[in-house]
Amino acid sequence: MEPNIYSINELHSFSSCYFGFRSLNSKPTVKFSQSSTLNGFSSRRLRPLMVGLRSYSPIIACSSVTKTENETSSPAAESPVSVNPVYVPKPSNRDTRTPHSGYHFDGTTRQFFEGWYFKVSIPERKQSFCFMYQVENPAFRRKLTRWEMLQHGPRFTGVGAQILGAYDKYICQYTEESQNFWGSRHELMLGNTFLANKDSRPPSKEVPPQEFNRKVLEGFQVSPLWNQGFIRDDGRTYYTKTVKTARWDYSTRPIYGWGNVGSKQNSTTGWLAAFPIFEPHWQIGMAGGLSTGTCLSSSYCQLHFELISSWCSVQCNVFEGANGEVALTAGGGLRQLPGLTETFENAALIGVHYNGVFYEFVPWNGVVSWEIAQWGYWYIAAENKTDLVELEATTNDLGTTLRAPTKEAGLAPACKDTCFGDLRLKIWEKKYGGTKGKQILDVKSDMAALEVGGGPWFNTWKGKTTTPEAIKTALRVPVDVDGIFGSAPFFKPPGL
Figure 1 (cartoon, one colour):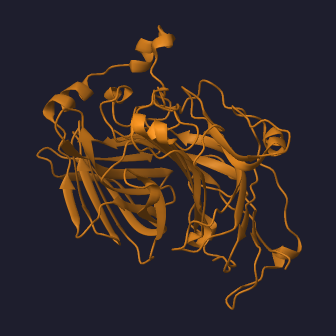
Figure 2 (tube, rainbow, N blue to C red):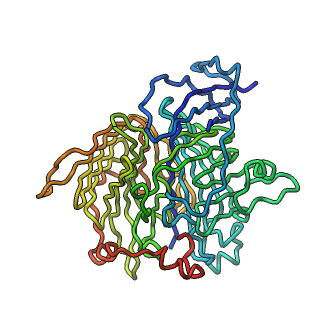
Figure 3 (cartoon, rainbow, N blue to C red):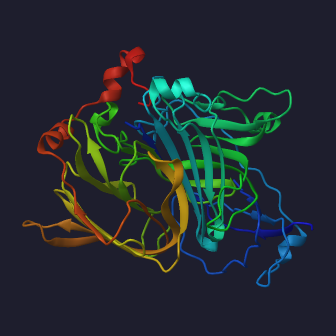
């Protein structure tokens, strides 16, 4: 059967990106080949983020199987639009570059995992695409031999790519080999080749799109400015609707990093994150931007390392009711602190960018508390010296189970996500005595990305940040780690 083509025009494109690493001890299009057809898109429009750039984003979706009863046709299918995003090589110095943008693998055989998450949302169509890449124990390029397992213990190896797409359609491609994975030591650039073209050597760095298409049949490459790839579902997913193949390429204009616009950007978890103290670890690579290309619109990027026993997150770039652009990132989890004993802390944060100003709520400048249900309800509140924030999110969506790194089974189903969350976000100035003063922000969205993971969760999780006072005091010291290593780049830790 010939694939059905669905074309969507005049979409505002917004982009955000975050990435995580864990060490274990101007006109876009979208092409999506799927196993069940897409429903018609809603014509309701949300107010776009006013970030100074409007992009018109045609999206093309392909269905490669038979029609279902609910399938709707589109007149645009008779005249598909072909458009190309603009590729720009990533410069070494960007205004919105955040610390820890690089690949954190140090070359040793210690257990290691690093993962990256990129999300884009299309307000006019109320759909989002989430791209997730991960690498496990790259010191071992292939599955461990018996002798290596005797030497180092059991390890999971390999590279994976997952996409949670429109209408919660899912695709995953995974290999136990990592010899074709590459990552930049100090910049947010990475890629992998699952299947190379005949007589072509897989790329070992970012290459122009045309060269990538010549050399790579199945794989991906990504930076803050460019995301491109083609993957084929490997058939391992039985618990949700999947698509057979996915192809994407889109460019991004970063708007927000992790700090005030025009200022030096912050490390998400403070300067001590330059050292193996906080593991698991979470870094925001880009809180918001504008994207054009195949498969995306509003963007966000995040990086993680080390396994977390339980976690939750809320992220959104598309809001109604704001007089300016808004980007929200919030998350928390239970993580282990370094030491001879197994000491854990509740770690959480809320970061809001609004009209170029960054409102940061972290354990060392205040208190973060939360109440998270097993599924369907998220409430997180925080305060610092000058402001207070509250967010409440709900969803009636059943959610989609995604894969995350686990000690017991490697990359395995371990979290649940949706991009159809109803969210309300409020910020106030803090009056003397800690009460709410003038309201700074009150906005809503029905396109929030919500997640719970780890566990198992048996009931509602209520928590509050519990960072030791010594660590709080250290993190308040204004240390410029980049500046220190700038005079001795040879000693600069990987990833910084």
